[in-house]
Length: 403
Image (cartoon, rainbow, N blue to C red; front, side, top):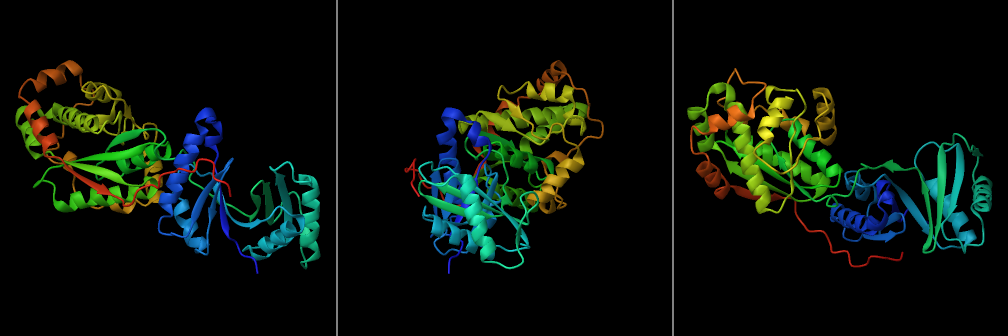
């Protein structure tokens, strides 16, 4: 008896990449291989406009689960492979139809002949395959407008693939095709969502977290480590840089007027993050700021705080309200971790009268009150780096795999 033996993977935006398409497809292939690394018998192959995963008796449902988190996939389907011979295609389509789960009182055949030397047109194939299914089933009819099941038949040079139904993918672009970004990761709701959205646009992530013991305890740090692990689900290994921030934060508290303390603290964080990013050859930063959400996220605050870095700062959440962000955090699984009641460094020494429209000239004047550069150098020098996520992408040497 025939069984589903492949997963057919579709992708959308990559078709628009022109001359860079092969590069994007190869990266997507590597990311798929990494996602299903726990299934060693699978084999991923690339053909024009599709990826094919050969299951080799691996459990198809278990293999499909991690594919849901791979950015760059528009959808994927269980598939049966047939030789390009009409009698075998007919029987394969029948078996795929019979073994598909769910209601199947009506169906439609949608044949697509990508391999033009195949002697039968797509329209003729629809009729032949549909007739074969009708002749070998009971109480089943054709409905070309609203079928219970659409039997898709892709006739390619390397073989014919039959699918029934599809699972939606995460969309976006393959992680690693848009360079690397340094994420400022707190223990809150927003920054992990910002990291997730940066991954969706193809960025690879490293992260910086500011830790202020003993004012922030080890549970607060563990919370951030757990959030980092969650992000590896969507983009592979992530390096977390844990910055010792206590001494600099105490110096800010001692030397800066309370209404500018938050502004100065964030300027120091940006300086440190920029230095760590440059040490890693990273060209952009990212954070979880949303315009006007809190005092430090007004346009005036962003303008003043941004002054200290020349690196672009990505703000994926800038136009979102809190409920939209919470919705995404629940969807990706970070919300239960983010709401754990362990304070991060931004909540200690927090003044009640932070200025909402800070000026650059005033911030610079306040910073003259103490020699902060030595604190920055000390924090960078003693930053601890931990890598979460295991394994490496396989090198993609077969750029034009044949199936």
